[in-house]
Picture 1 (cartoon, one colour):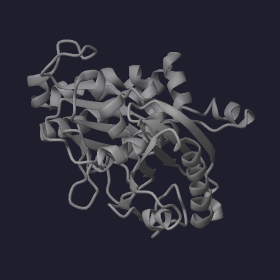
Picture 2 (cartoon, rainbow, N blue to C red):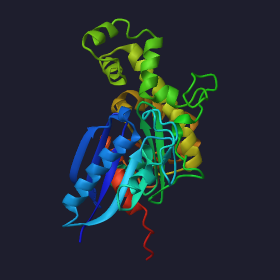
Picture 3 (cartoon, one colour):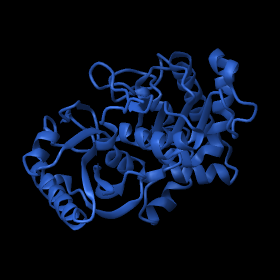
Picture 4 (cartoon, rainbow, N blue to C red):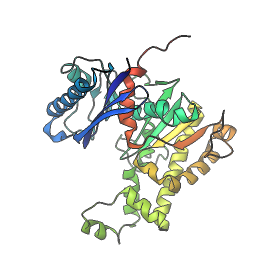
Length: 334
């Protein structure tokens, strides 16, 4: 009997529940506002009701492998205890796995949303495309997250905090970061950093009034549009982000020496704006990359270090959560 699993993408604004086959084929999707202000108990109740309804609809024809949940961090693993998650105010100390298992009778695994995206990219995205079972994924969104997969399995590190690539310091005198340090990758390459830098340079003096009239806020995507239209200041902001990414990747490549590094998240849509500077910085600062870089960074070459844009887009976290129950199984020995 064919298996299916259910994944949950718990976000600060929206909550998605999806059922997938082991091949990543989507069977069903439910999405609704998280309504985090109603408190964790109400949100978890709604989430579990959606999970139960989805399971009951699909379980007759397929075997259920389990439930995976991708949550904003920081959180402790494997229990999934949240620690002051900025996107879920009021959720500090919530024991997410325990709360779910108290409501549902099936196996439950909880992990960070960044790790879930990395797992999906390895099994169903760029990793599958390049034939790589080890990769590091960098997610450029409101902040900068990351996940590491080694030999097909998530690497969590000692305390579950492996992959916090956004908080590697690049410039000690740089802007303050929410983590308490200064000059982290996150303060240069996140969507928040792009908007902050634009305001520092008065880039938006002539455009914010228009944005306000339209009832919208300035975003990294709008700054990217300005750069594509030829605005030199906007282009420079993305080149600075690319330089920071190159430095961050240089440290990762010199340390991990993995075959594949993928870059996802909303800011990755501006790939053409930041990638040229990113690759130039990599060549300057990573001797490991210079030793193993492909002749064409846009073409796969066996035995080389590849950096590419993530393939799965906004579905990566949900797909990875659904893959988590299957990924927990012991490897079959030949």
